[in-house]
Image 1 (cartoon, rainbow, N blue to C red):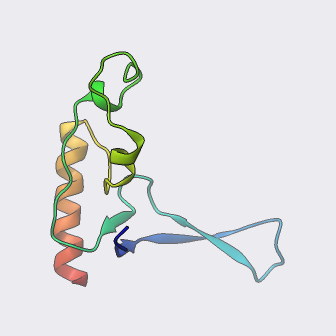
Image 2 (cartoon, rainbow, N blue to C red; image 1 turned 120 degrees about the horizontal axis):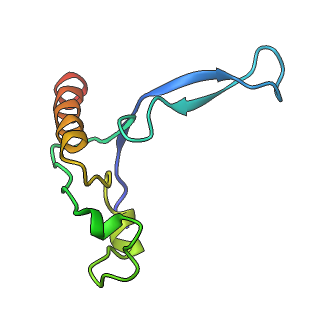
Length: 94
């Protein structure tokens, strides 16, 4: 499998299980915190492909297909926001 590069936006979080000077890093957002470092744009999916009833409709994504995707979105407003943010991130960092 081809290795891919991503741009990640992380936030520092203190963890009570570590010492005072140790911390962990988490994505700033599960949807908007990671971008594949290229100019390709992800696909907009239908809710039936990744929604709750995906098992019964016969058109669902396979796990192998889903794991290759940069992000899985089916809401048009979130999809457009992701595209806009990715364009800005790629312009600034690539």
